[in-house]
Length: 325
Image (tube, rainbow, N blue to C red; front, side):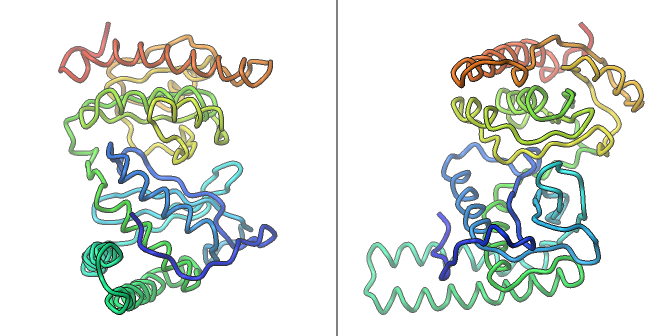
């Protein structure tokens, strides 16, 4: 659980220098423990509830979205437009200067909750003072390390540090350039529905055995129906950020699966190296008309169809079989 928070005020919806969305990279920040996932959800909620945030040295106006990932020993703070998810600025924050403070965070957190359960009020206050002191020190260090990169106030820095602590211990550090795990890329039109669902199902079906990514030919928006139907099978899609094909750094995949009519041509134009490229014809539930139950039914049908096909197709890939069929 996340430790107690400071005095709060509700976020002003008219303020532009603020974060309205925080998402996490599912390939580098992973956990199958529901308590751990709950902890970073709480940290995200606290950060979004009240913050002051804007990137320095850019002309873009807020509000902003923040996409977090871990590369090597750094947290990547990727600032984006919350509506289009177009990149605005990205900064690498080395975790090395924060190692002691991260250890202190968990040591004091455990002591804090133990004190709440069994200690006298003066003992709780002693631990709480240590907690506040540690948080203030970490927040000041965070603001110093982000100077001239991100402009945040002390309260926002406290909450951002709490989120970094929440996700950092559970982060999977796979160097994709050196990893021997099989890689699969799912591509659809907007990276809002079909491809992120497929990639999430692949990661759930083969945890730690595959690197599954998803992109869109064009940029899309978060889809609330996706969030709901994936939550039903224990997958949190609220942390998904739509990405476009042109953002890809990796150029080689063992398997590329195209899930929309415009994907094959875009993949060919990108010049990706792929062991195999396949076209799966699946319906786009976002085009279905009808009441909420009808639309949800279409999304569930897509989820279940992709779940079956992903398991059947990728089993041989993760077992060392051929990419071609």
